[in-house]
Amino acid sequence: MKPTKKNLMRVIEVGWINFKRNSWLAFGTIGIMVLTLLIFVGLVAFNIVSRTTIASLEEKVDITAYLKTNVSDDQASEIVNELENLPEISYVNYVSREEALEEFKKRHADEELVQQALLELGENPLQASLEIKAGETAQYASLVSFIEKSDFSNLIDKIDFYENSTVISRIQKISSGLRVGGILVTLILSLIAVLVTFNTIRLTIYSQKQEIEIMRLVGASNWHIRGPFVVEGALYGIIAGLAVLIIFYPMVYLVSPRVQSFIPSMDLANYFSNFFGQMGLLVLGSGIALGVVSSVIAVRRYLKI
Amino acid sequence: MITFEKVIKEYNGGQKSYRALDDINLEIKDGEFVSIIGPSGAGKSTLLKMLIREEVPSGGQITVDNINVPELTDSEVPYLRRKIGTIFQDFKLLTNKTSFENVAFALEVVGADEEQIKTDVPKVLRIVGMDEKFENFPHQLSGGERQRIAIARALIHRPKILLADEPTGNLDLLNTFDVIKLLMKINEFGTTVVLASHDREVVNAVGQRVITMDKGKVVKDQEQGKYTI
Image 1 (cartoon, one colour):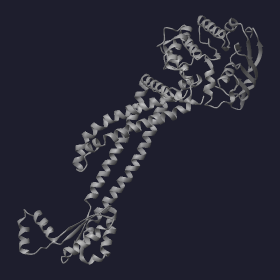
Image 2 (cartoon, helix red, strand yellow; image 1 turned 135 degrees about the vertical axis):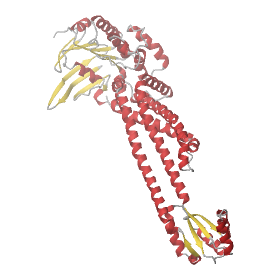
Image 3 (tube, rainbow over the protein chains, first blue to last red; image 1 turned 60 degrees about the vertical axis):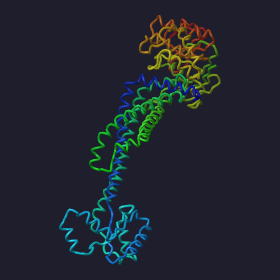
């Protein structure tokens, strides 16, 4: 028998009928697949949470270079230009002495003592500064040494990197740890999940070993025998995938406000609603792939007769 | 036409290997009804299994319709099996398919279309006397009924050769003779029938060529034979 369109319809129909008749067995297999796929989406969510956490931490890291008070605005903008040409730098902001004073006054508007002290001083005590952000946290150290060795180093009073360096390196360690850990955990748990599902489907098909052998003895081609099992496997995947989406989404909406109170920049509910299509495809796709591949491998064993 | 030429089958059991078939030479012509008899372990089943390549000989040649059976590749085997209808002692019905679907399966296998299945299956089920239980599953049927379904499945694609391995081994007397009558009728329509049995009554009722086996060898081959062990 050749895989024509008509035969394909028949194979799908037989797969569906077998699925209904094996519903008790199918229920167990689907249950295992639901657990597997929940682990998958859990890992996806975990990776997103950790990545956003890292990003929001790194966002907070910057260094400030204070310029000597005798540096003019023109000299400052030259430095800014030079720094902006560096590929490592993602952002440079020049804060002039006047702006710094404004900012300082605003911040201490309620404190009379400070305002009075400023008045009595008569002149602007604050330095102009450069706020610098690097593309990656690891680049700050080399950036600082570059600035210290540059032509304009004599215009710079001090850089606050050394006060922040322990915080910066700690954040860097946490983020790289989370990244590597995330990948490792994902790999190991995925492997376990795939093995459990594969073995469950293998047992399901083992229980129909005799049927497969009978089909062979009656002269059925391998394609004809395998087809309905593959359809059944795909059905397992589809149903398990739908179940996972039905479980996962309400859970996200439930948990999201709590997570957001820890990390304000992370809106899980919003994130997963935006990617509903992709998540659906991912879950259903991996469910179907798991079901189909496991079925094909499991059936092959009994086609030898 | 079926031929066996110097066919040997050895099984390895520990250090001792034992011969299930020992130098079998046979020729079965188209349209014959051949009964193969002998005690349990004589090699009857092994002989039939060779014909559908459920077993492969350790030596010798087997041909079915000029097909060299032991040489077939795994993917060619289904084509051989579609030329042959087989009835087994334990029926070998598909347990999660209904009577109708079990018989229809053999037609689907040869690539028949929906129309043909809808007209042929009820016809053949009627021939074997199972016109009422189309929608029943094997476990809802009696032994005799199951064997009729199995026979219907073996016939539905009009094979040139029908193999029956102890088809009456699990049946009572009444059902036994119904099945034998059915086999004889099928043979009258021109199908070659090879029947393996250790049932004296059955073989004597057929009254055609009888091949007697013992300990893996053919010990007697008579036209118009009787069961004489």
